[in-house]
Length: 500
Ligand code: NAP
Ligand code: MG
Image (cartoon, rainbow, N blue to C red; front, top):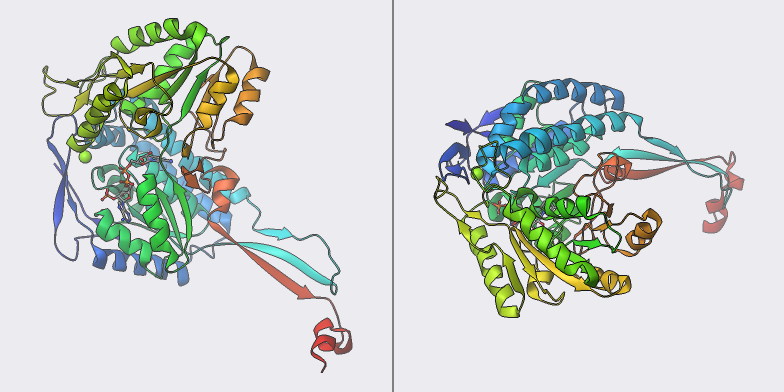
């Protein structure tokens, strides 16, 4: 069994309280690791270390190319650890071994590589258009790191979220304190162990596992923290905005979703059906932009639902450590009860349960909270199962009469994270894509996003963007410098205004 400490100022330390907690394997309930439980005092220490590394350390003042070089060296270590991290993610977070090895871990690492590389190519010194008003001046803009950034992340894709918060912050010269989710701290702690052996100076990256209500809130209120990058639920996102307002911190939020997945009547169902299954059931639906609302044209509704049912009934639910499993466990018992409650609610609301709806037990699965991939048909978009984020393997299929209707219902949501359109006619799909009010729209695809592209939400799915130049700019302040060009006192504009 592994043991993880807090990573503060380049050292691995116990919590000030001496407390630890156990993180468990959602497939079995077995303990994966003992982890130091960071509290408010530990957050203070970590923020102090990050502050010193920013205010007095070499990192923010280094030429960007030097930071890139150090991060790309670290990337080699990160790559070497890929299969170890994949195993840890399977054990601690219930990513199926196949998903962790083929997708989530290597894919996360590619973000590290790309953002480190992109930061070197950004403009940190930009000209301002010549504007001789009210007097001639040489105007330019400096892009400067914010300072100390807090990263607060959820349990669903913990390693990816750790990379998504650390890499852009430090690539742009900031320092960071990361608070992993209580349920899944292991891979972020393991990442800290890898980074400790690289050229990244002490205090630039700090990792403090601990409870949201203690360590999380302390990060959001500490006046020495300049920016918060949060990924998690919309509910906690609202709270974080409130907490951050006390010291007027810059906040970026990646929040919940209820993403629409629209099948047009000319969709190639050979691709769109498995694509919609992938959209919904990747990681048991515990993905922020999961395609949870499938809009099917009335003329294809029976065929679409029949083919969906047939496909999901062929999926294997099993231990995340088993390479044969298509779906692993839900993260914990609380999440199981949430999913179970929505399955009941959907039936009470009048939706038709087409398949699934139950916990999966037996065959060695009794130690975890496994759930059948579930499909509701005859869903009305106003039902709670179509409006609220379930964060489990429950698909709502909504019938539509016209594409206008489908677009209207797709946009009838407080969320605006992702969405997809499936069609053989790309111009037609693009017309729909333009009208969907979400931060990402896929055409004949789902879940895959490029590290060079912006990621984020419309409406209550978030504020700001991650990745690509858009994401890196969220970590940079914009400073305007004005160098006066008027040589004599008498010609100074203000000299005349103030009447001296
Ligand atoms: P959550 O309950 O909002 O927690 C997210 C993080 O915030 C955890 O580290 C949590 O700590 C911490 N936290 C909780 N209360 C806090 C407070 N008062 N102050 C500061 N921090 C606090 O979300 P979750 O259940 O872990 O994750 C699922 C949610 O994340 C879903 O809604 C999903 O849509 C969203 N998500 C969004 C994206 C995106 O990119 N938009 C990506 C992934 C997930 P504890 O672990 O100790 O509670
Ligand atoms: Mg765990």
